[in-house]
Image (cartoon, rainbow, N blue to C red):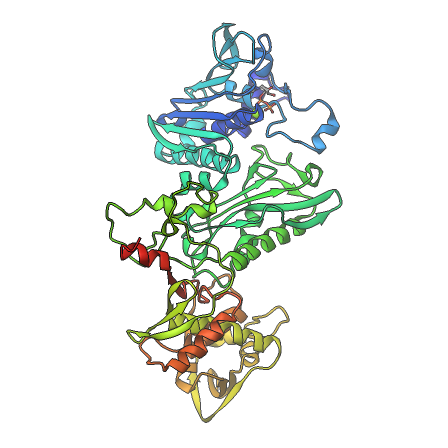
Length: 582
Ligand code: ADP
Ligand code: MG
């Protein structure tokens, strides 16, 4: 075939293929346009998985009459004008491609009105204008997209079920509702409202509307004024909300990243956040996080991806570190104690008419304390955020497993095993860092017969410095002496373990499925778990006192190394309320 220049129609469809890959991409472009137009209310509707209809209505700036066909012309935009503008893009759109691309693969109608001017409409079929005129409308814009991909059967074939396409659409609206808490978002899919955010301007309200109460009440705030790194053009700031460990989910779908308020797929950033949760989550659990990264526009190239869903940072390591530090500090400073004044699964409060709705109990994070005059002491929300444990006085033991203790505000119930695990975990790590590990020699060495796989693991390089797992174990106090092909003699073990327990710890360690935790971390976890007091072990008051004192001194007293809570708190005001003393 001879070389020929493609017709504009073919060029338009090829370009459209990159921008509008699936119905959710249409929604994304239209929502971005509404946000760029400064809308405070954005309503989205979809029918038939977005193929039948997508409609986005906003109350933004609108388009002046006479400019509608321009809006549907390729490379026509009101957002940038000079080449240098590309270096610091402040809007979500900038290529002038979305509207013409959508019009090339669907039937489109737009009705729009700017402030104080008459409304006008335009309709297009296969990219060609079929109608134009005036039409009344309040300020704002409504775009209706019908029969998407009707003229591209190949694209239609690759779409998933309507339910799947719907979930992608819902995800787009969800993400933008989180990125713009000051905008009221509504999404109706097949006439059912699936997203309805209040537009209050508070991120936690948006999280509540989208992820529900259970998650919202476990969110911790990354401080707004935190400056996390410097760059040649200014500072990188990170703010947002992260879920306490107990809010973790089984997938990464609950982590959202916004760069200068643009939703991006945060492949690198997932890792930064998960690193920050190191030691706080059980295997297979992923954090809930809404992370806003603000940095000078010149520091980030948003023009590297057809759907603009990826960006390139000039200083990627800086951003990575900033996110990791910001999240970690939120987790350490703000780790809340699960408290029964909030509805939690750990303690069942039977509902009765005078019980205030759960919402009134969890105000502290996203509302100023209620200013209503007659608010009684009992209704005042407990401080949700507590950095360290208060001084606790043991009262006794429950079921041989829980320590009951009195604190400045009521009763604390401590899981003795989980608490001791936390203590041992930090102690073992500290000792190893200081090369001051307490070791205990065994009078009778214990034989450990490794399976071929376990033996291979032991010889594997397990640390950054190239040490084998066996060497790394030695640094923690496990002395394994080769004794035949795959047999070892355990001659010494970390203090707190005996021969039997160390054998169990070793086996467990060599069987744990691969996780993101480092071997050092896994070894410390394993030692902590096997050295800690068991549930069911009777403790004297003095032993309890000692355990509580050591727990108070840990860095993260509220959760065990696997992320389970160590302490439950029953506040005095809660007790008063339940006993009807108020
Ligand atoms: P881009 O967003 O890259 O500029 P689009 O094709 O998405 O390109 O839109 C073209 C132009 O149409 C925009 O630059 C804007 O001026 C106008 N426009 C599109 N949607 C809206 C809207 N919802 N409200 C106001 N103006 C809009
Ligand atoms: Mg656009």
